[in-house]
Image (cartoon, rainbow, N blue to C red; front, side):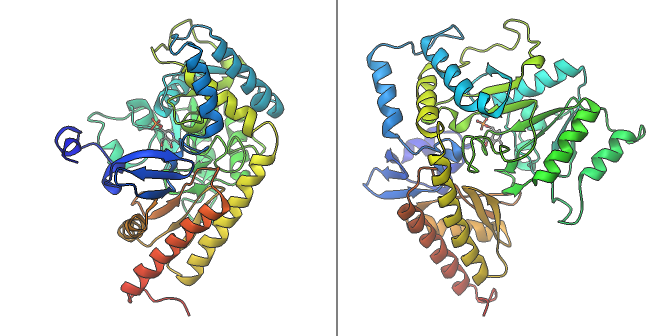
Amino acid sequence: MMIFKEYESEVQSYSRSFPVVFTQAKGSKLFDENGNEYLDFLAGAGSLNYGHNNPILKESLIEYIQNDGVAHGLDMHTEAKAGFLEAFRDIILKPRDLDHKVMFTGPTGANCVEAALKLARKVTGRHNIVSFTNGFHGCTLGALAATGNSHHRGGAGQPLSGVTRLPYDGYLGDNFNTLELFKKMLTDNSSGLDMPAAVILEIVQGEGGLNTASGKWLKELSMICKEHGILFIADDIQAGCGRTGTFFSFDQFDIKPDIITLSKSLSAFGLPFAVTLFDRKLDIWKPGEHNGTFRGNNHAFVTAKKALETYWADDKFASHIHARSEQLKLALNKICDNYPELYRKGRGLMQGICCPSGDIADDITSLCFKENLIIETSGPEGEVVKCFPPLTVSEEEMAHGLNILEQAFDQYFSAHMELKKAS
Ligand code: PLP
């Protein structure tokens, strides 16, 4: 369509991989203007964990709008906000023994990261933040300083400062504990590391290539932080809201982050909505000090509350995610068994296949799109084919998508005989 070419900025990205015009979406499917149906293994980059137009959530929102519920109220108290906070307290915070307060920031992931970094600096009186290789935290200047990717960093147009980067778990190979470097630098007064206000990290790195941190590494990092008065910020914007199988991606680990950022699927309906959660002792904000017009989204409060009550009040949804994750793991392992150049990465419903290059991964996702599977890449060179279906995906839909993916790899490798199929 010419209108996009003529008027939409060159900054557009996902539309380049999937150059059709979408008109409708339902569950795990998208439909284009010519009536073609696509299986969505991108899920709004993690913003559609509960599927497109989830009927339970849609109904609650339609009812709210029909009754003239408040759509926008700045940060004034509304019934919808109270409903969300109560559900979040009862279903998410209390059962995890998290005594965290909820700060409604601007509605994007970058917004809640900015608030987290600002608060950590304000509380500790230190300026430096430690972030990790391949971490992605957003494209506003503060968040971008903590982001590793040079393509995104290159867009800043000014120095990105206030952050020291250290190697993430596994960055130097399986047998090297990268925290040894951090520990040494913190105790050597000539290491050049300004004492950090906080560390910020993803428990599973979404954009950085599905790298996972182990429970042991995370626990050790949290102990180092405690010892030196450094705040631990878990950026759960992409890996949270159930993506790894539990509501928070760190639920199964013995850590309690001081600050947690959530966005993407928090609204559960694809609506813009973000929060920064922090230990109540850290709540030293002055009224309106970190302000914004769109903080909290009343429509999102309604759908988020409904999603918490529907999907997280018991273990059924977590069991469903676990079953689909195992299905995904088996299928990806099967593909990797066929081609020794490939290996599986990630966990839960954020797993993928690492290819020898970004070009190969691109060819695979293009082949998938020809078969109406929407799937993207991640990693420093875009070398990881990343399976990101809605968490509500059915067993049949998952099997169908994985079948397309397997055939794409077979087609690619049979056309490139230099990369021979394993015997
Ligand atoms: N943090 C993580 C872990 C992310 O994956 C993202 C986006 O992909 C962000 C922050 C930034 O979120 P947003 O794009 O909504 O600003």
